[in-house]
Length: 113
Length: 114
Image 1 (cartoon, each protein chain N blue to C red):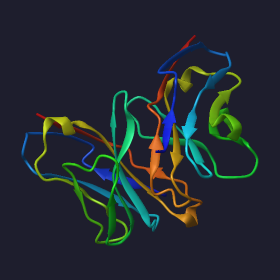
Image 2: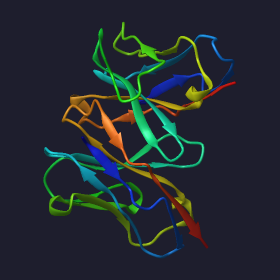
Image 3: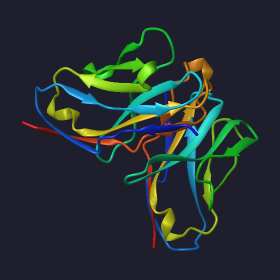
Image 4: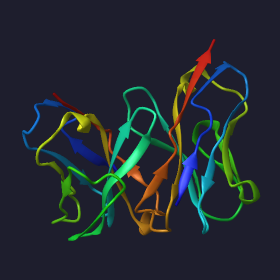
């Protein structure tokens, strides 16, 4: 089954404690992205990757890091989380070979206190 | 800059009534357009997409959308709404054929009364 899997799904953490949200896809997609969803703002892209070792900033990259060492994985790293990073995060993947349909993970609810 | 506008933040309809959710985009080139639905506490499910060809696109769950280039619109429609359609709906435009980046609208929350 085609899947984008994110972990953890729910997390409460404290300001400044580094955390990583993992994302893995099983469809051999080249493109992967991270979005955050906030009330009244819709989804905004944080970072994206067009292939292994190729990443670029999206619209709201401040406070985040990513890496793409393997094609299937695209972790999102918050080096020093702050309360304004409390949000719902989505990982997504797509590929020209899949008709450019974008598949989303189920989301990760992150609360920073 | 590319943008997507969903003018209606919240819409309420009765079950069985018809539905139209509005979406306007701003993009200089050929747009690749999507509608997603998000049920409470759930992820995003693709309803339909438009890349080229017939401007009336059929999707899942009985939804359709019509691309109108002259109006820069991609409105979502359903002839008869079911209570299970209550959710938040997002229109999005891809900034390229590679669809590595989507610009989303702010969403329209649909409430359905029995």
